Every structure is written in C-alpha cells, then in structure tokens.
Image 1 (cartoon, rainbow, N blue to C red):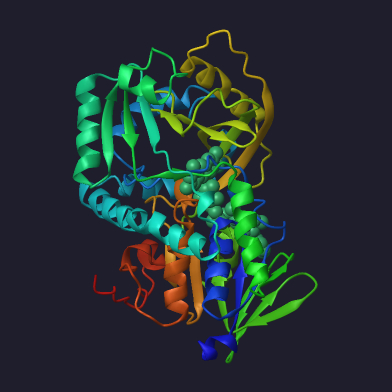
Image 2: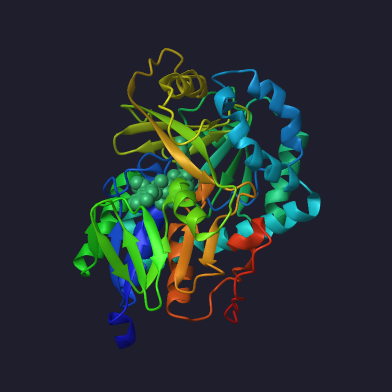
Amino acid sequence: MSDNKTQHIGVVGAGVIGICCALNLQRAGFKVTLYDENGLAQGCSKGNAGHFATEQVFPLAHPALLKKLPAMLFNPLGPLRIDWRYIIKALPWFWHFGKNMQSKIYKANTSALKALNQEALSAYENLLNEFNLGHLLTKKGSLLTFETTPLTQINSLYNSFKEQGVAVELLNSEQLRILEPNLTTAISYALLFKDVAHSVDPHLFCLNLAEQFSALGGQFCQQKITSIVQTDKDFTLASKTHNFTADKVVIAAGAWSKSLLTPLGYKIPLDTERGYHCMVTSNYGLSRPVASAERSFIMTPMSQGLRIAGTVEFAGLERKMNAKRALALLPNAKAMLNDTTVDLKPNSVWMGCRPSLPDSLPVIGEAPSHSNLFLAFGHQHLGLTQGAITAELITSLCLKQPTKIDLTPYCISRFSTQAACSSHIPLAQ
Ligand SMILES: Cc1cc2nc3c(=O)[nH]c(=O)nc-3n(C[C@H](O)[C@H](O)[C@H](O)COP(=O)(O)OP(=O)(O)OC[C@H]3O[C@@H](n4cnc5c(N)ncnc54)[C@H](O)[C@@H]3O)c2cc1C
C-alpha cells in the first residue's frame, strides 16, 4: 500500500467506468486524478436506463437478428437506425459484427460476458457498502415482457437463460399483475430476473461515487486530454493548455477512447450505438425495470418519474440528437400500461453515445505495447452494470496482482494482429 501512495494515476473520462476506477484506485492507496472535459458523468452515464442488467449474457451479434434487420431498418423511428451519411464509416463495425455471429465465437463471447456479469453486483456491493451507499441499489428484480411472442419461443429463451445460470422465473399474465398491477392485460407472459438491481437516478449514482473519491483525496480536473505520450519514466497527458504527468494511465473515455488510442498504434472497431430516453413525470405505479421483447425498449421507475429508454442509432459522435427518436418511445410505453386514458407527457429527452465493440465485450486490460497504460472502455449496453467489476479488475492490474477473471477475452488485440496482452492468471476460487 505505501508504495502505491507515491504512484500517481491519471484516469481519462469521468463516466461510470472512469469514476468507479478512480474511486477504487484511490481506495487502494494510489494518488488519482480524474480528467473529463465535460464534468462528472455528463456522457452516456448520465441518462441510461439505470438497470444493473446482469441477466444480459447474450451478445448482440446473433444470426437471428438478420431476419429482423430489414423491417427494423425500414422504420426510421424504429429500434435500429443507420444514418445513410454514416454507412461507410460504420462498415468496419458491421464487418466485425458479422464475423462474431459464428456459433463458436458467439459461445465464447457469451461466456466472457457472463463472467463479468456474474461478478458485477457483488463488486458494486463491496464498493458501495464500504461507503454506506448500499441503498443506491434497488433490488426488486426486472421484467422482460411478451405480448405476441408464442409460448414455445418464450420457453426456449427461458431455457437459454437457465442454461447460462441466470436466476429467472416465467410468469403468466396473472402472476405478472400481482407484481405490477399497472401493466396492460395485453402482456401474456414475462420473465422475472431476480439477481439484478436498478438505480432510481443513474446520474446521482455517479455523483455519489465521485463524492467519495474526492473525500478520499482524489482530484478531479476538467480538461480534455488531447494526447497521451509515454516517456522513459512516466506518461505525459496533454490538454490544449496544460501538460500533466502520471506514472500510470487508465483510458476510460467511453465512445471517445479511439481518438486517444489511434495515435498510440492501436486499431479498434469502436463505434457508438446512440441510445435515447424520454422522461415522464409519473412512475405510473411501476416498481422495477420493465422491458418489452417485441417493442425493444425499457421503462425504469426513477426518482424524477418514469424513464422510457432504448433504441440504437448509428450516426457517429458528432451529429445532433434526433428528438423524434426519443418521443417515438412514448406510444410504446403507453401501450404497456393498463390505464388507456393515461396521457404520457414528455418532461425531457436525451441521447447518449454507448461505447460499442462488435463482439459486445469491453476492452479491459493493460495495453500490449505500453506497460502501465490500462484500458477500460467499450461497455456498450452494460456500462452501468459492469462499472464496479471493471474497476476491481483494473485495480488488480495496477497493483500487479492476479485478476479475479481471466482477462484474455477483453484484450484490445483481439481485433488486430498486434501482440496479445500479457496473460492474467485468475485467482483460485
Ligand atoms: C438509452 C441508454 C440506456 C442505457 N441503459 C443502460 C442500463 O440500463 N444498464 C447499463 O448497464 N447500461 C446502460 N446503458 C449503457 C451505459 O450507459 C454505458 O455503457 C456507460 O454509460 C458507458 O460509460 P463510460 O464511462 O464508458 O462512458 P461515458 O459515460 O460516455 O463517459 C466517458 C467520458 O469520457 C469523457 N471524455 C471523452 N474523451 C475525453 C478526453 N479526450 N479527455 C477527457 N475526457 C474525455 C466524456 O466527456 C465522458 O464524460 C445505456 C445507454 C443508453 C444510451
């Protein structure tokens, strides 16, 4: 520990991943500075659906998606949209996405996703309980509902979750309404996931963690890091106006991580799946996250009302949000509630840039050609879920200790012919 106190770590990016890493590293005894150009949790971590979705162990790249794709793409406000001006830029991502549909790769990616998700909640509990913040996790399970899907298909999905060790229960319409009386009777079945949680305010969740980071002596610096250069003895992190030094660096800049890594020689098909939310002022009596299998969206009861979230849009990091996509979620939410007279008035709309890699896995590890440069980005639809476990893994690497999980599947070199990451020996269970 005393050694760590003399070591300075710069964490670039103050989303949920960067904040969890900074807090856990500071707690381990390092001197940490957290950099973000926009303040704390102003990126994708600000407006997500607040679901610690540990049940989501299946990667998105599955051949079944190909059948649904044409219908999705012809609906401009539907669950998936590719901006025609962005098609060429998105091609590398989709090329890798297609490759990841191969059954052997899909199985390996499922195992790697599951390995992270299985540890996700206990990692948060370790972190939050230390600061008496356990109440930030609401544990009432979550629901995946079905209106028209045949029971045979639901059963097969249920069995797939069971096979992966996910704690799940199949509910019929009556059983569902005991849990959520305000959902429509048009919902015929639901899967209840039990080992999950939700946050009633994901932005405040991040701010609470950042507050603990400051209380432990961690520094926040509002600067955009424009380059990272490794010298013989340390790193220089440059902004437009300053040069900062650090012994170790963690890149946790979400969907923007690529621009810091390209000059260092790392090629990655990182892109953004832009997602939207729309807030309405009432929770409509819901007490847990409710997703719809057919409508591809989720509603989470939060302290400021109901958050209706979802959709995937490929349009890059620069283009402005399309508020129509957020508002298009409202009729879906309305159709899911039993009070047909309810008038869902939007309070606010939001768009966030999910940092996504085509195999649905994040990059977590030490950069193969730069010792003491650590990578923690690309958590796609599961960044909130995987924040604390990512922080635990990065902390073990910085402490040069064995990691809880074998990090080979998350190594950055999986997309290139670059040298592989140094092997990480998992702890004996
Ligand atoms: C609609 C929607 C719903 C979602 N729902 C869920 C959910 O229910 N559960 C779940 O687990 N996940 C969910 N997600 C995904 C989740 O929000 C993301 O995976 C997560 O927020 C990513 O966190 P991050 O810290 O990697 O990135 P971000 O939160 O985007 O943070 C990256 C930060 O880096 C900063 N940055 C970038 N470049 C630089 C630089 N050069 N210098 C300094 N700072 C820089 C940015 O300003 C930003 O603040 C959802 C996402 C969306 C869009």
